[in-house]
Image (cartoon, rainbow, N blue to C red):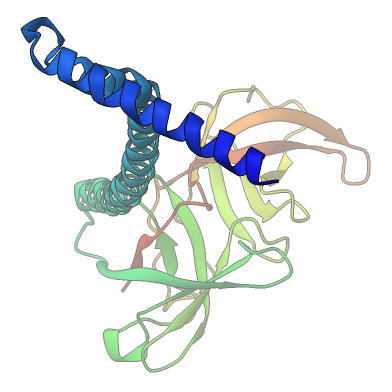
Amino acid sequence: MDFLKNKLLTIILILCLVLTIFIGVTANNKNNEGFFQGVITSTIAPIQKQIYIAGQRITNIFSFIKSISTLRKENAELKSQVQDLKNKLVDYQKIKTENEEMRKLLQFRPDNNFKLISANVIGKVGDNWFNVLIIDAGQNDGVKKGCYVRAADGLVGKVIEVSSNTSKVMTILDENIKIPVVINETLEEGLLVGNNNSNTCKVSYLPNDTKSTVGNLVITSNITNNADVVVPSGIIVGTIEKIEYEKINLSKTAYIKPAVNFYKVTKVQVIVK
C-alpha cells in the first residue's frame, strides 16, 4: 500500500518536472508565445461558433416576431383605411345618385295648373315591399289624397293617405291602383293596374284590334273623375313587354315594365293643384 502511494507520488512529481521544463523551453521560444492561447482558442472556437450561431438564430426569431407584430399593425391600419374608403365611396355613390335624381326631377316643367312638392322616400310597407311608399311630405306641405307622385324616371303612383308631415303612396305595382293611361305611339287608352306583386304592371282594356306593340311607351292620360286631383298627361309609366288577349272582356292587356326602379327610388315629387 505504501509502495503504491510512493509510486503515484513519484509519477506526479515526474509530470510536474516535465511540465516545468516544457514551460521553460517554450517561454524562451518566441515562436511558441501563443501556444497555450492557440490550444485554448482551438478548443473553445467550435463551442464559441455554435453559441454565436445559436445567438444569431435567436436574434432572427425575435426580429421575425417583431416584424409579424409590425405587419399585423400595418395590416390593421390598411384595413381601416380601406373600410374608410369604402364608406366614402358608398356616400359618394349615394350623393351622386340623389343628385342625378334631383337633376332629372328639376327637368320636369309643370304648367300653371299644378305645382310640385319635393319629398323623400322614408319607408316601404305592404305585402310587397314596393306596393306602398311612405314620403316625408303631408298636409302641412299641401299634399292631398289622390295626388299623383312621380320620380325622376317616371310615375310612382298616387297618394292614398295623408297625415300632417307624411303620406302613403300606392305605387303602380299594387293591383288595387287604377290610373288612366295612353299608349304614346297609338294614342289608345287603357287602365293601368298592378300585376300581382310581380314588380310589373299592366294596361287593361286595350282594343281587341290594338295597334300597340312591344316597346311602345305608356304615359299618363289627363282623364280624372276627381275635380280636386290634377292628372298631368305625358308622365312616363313604362314600356310594353308583351300583349295578351283577354277572353273575359274580349280585349287585350299589355304588360308593362315600369320606368321607375322601385329598388332605388329615394326622391319624388307630389303633383298638386
